[in-house]
Amino acid sequence: MSPGDRQGSWIIVASFVAALLLTLLPLSGVAAIAWPEWVALVLIYWCMALPGRVGVGTGWMLGLLLDVVRGALLGQHALALAVVAYLTLKLHQRVRLFPLAQQAVTVLVVMTLYYLITLWIKGLAGKAPDLWLQLTPSISTALMWPAMFVLMRFLRRHYRVA
Image (cartoon, rainbow, N blue to C red; front, side, top):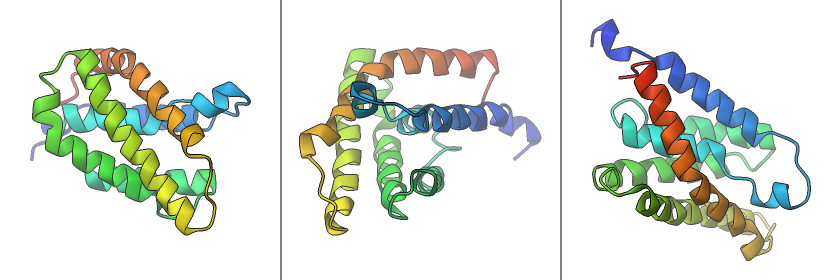
């Protein structure tokens, strides 16, 4: 693999750092309940755009980082993001062809599975939260998908990330 094949790696890293910072914003009220899962959105985008560079390992590492910074059970978000990355990699050739609205529906399904995995792990740990309240972010995440897709595609093309 030549050095030119890794062009724009810093954009990928910077987008994940920005997503982590957005995830860690201190919020209250409705904003805290319905805040999108930014790391998962960025992971889904990069898995669809560059499946050879961003994958399950990236999702696992980001999930471990999320577990540490959120103080969650170690491996909870890691497993969920690894599953998200795996599903995105399996479906990326089909989903790329969909219009943005259909892509958002796919993101809704994948994010609902993400939250169900985290809820299952919380339940196993004896912390069973309200199901519907915990699934609200999957809707807001899916609603953010078109804007996130357009922004990330612009950055990828502008900085020629390959």
